[in-house]
Image 1 (cartoon, helix red, strand yellow):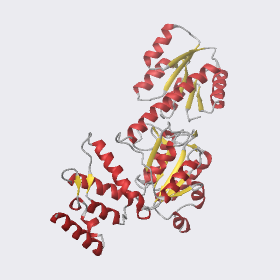
Image 2: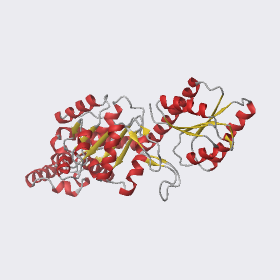
Image 3: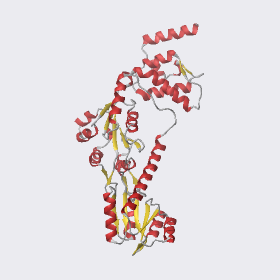
Image 4: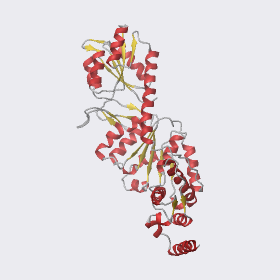
Length: 411
């Protein structure tokens, strides 16, 4: 059950309380409003997903409430509830912006069916947003590793993916921690749900709580509309927290509570929201050193590292480099609308294979991209490689390579 916040608006206490109890029993968070004025105040926070709204109220009517909410930019979905069943009333409610219409006496099954329909639709909309953000091109993404250490990583990914365990991925920058996190999500039981990624070190500290947990309208200066946090946006899916070691201590405490309780409370809201968000964290730092130095909470570390995957650096898996280069070249060719296949001069390939790659796969990808731009006749030569990589070759190897190149020229 994903998190949905429902407001029951009705001036009849018995009906209001029965509806609220039913909604709560179904697993949704719920609050009540006994009048149009009370409903207006609660809707104004901007954190209500669905309002079950009576049409006739002592201090106003539900149709005006819908119309005023739409004019104020409030995105709450309204399902109107009324004992005055007529086509005219239904049409007025829909014209004002209501999404649906049910009549009294209210049947529990009908209300739950409407809420579940909206929950599924909301999930699809948020998933589409996440997909539009995540998809950068349509090039093929699959690559099979050959090195034993990366085959071990693939085995670990396949074992942990079908579970709901939190995962901590460690390794140097550029080793593919984000790729491993995505593979875990894709092989999980929730691949059709959102996969969201955030770099914990890139978010300003004063915005972290709002970014993670969201806020209501007016929660702080500049909060002119409600915003859902990452945990709610990824509800039912996966949230990848990259560079987790960069989180300040006060946010580590809040994250620990979320991981333990599976609940979030947006800034400015009194309502706690249940979430089913899987957490995958990653860091290139020695996080145990951070724990020993008091920079990272020990209890949070143990929570996140229930299952740990260490990504090996590229220099320890050189067997993957040749096919990695060809994989990158195929993707570049696909993105270039079917241009002729790019080739690598044997001498250039030897230099790439002999380099230590301190920046790992990311540095290799940058070098290949640069070389493709500079290459003539779709063939990468030594002159197309970054100078630092060429100069990093050992003198003995480089003399051999130059002699080899001279022989080729003479021939």
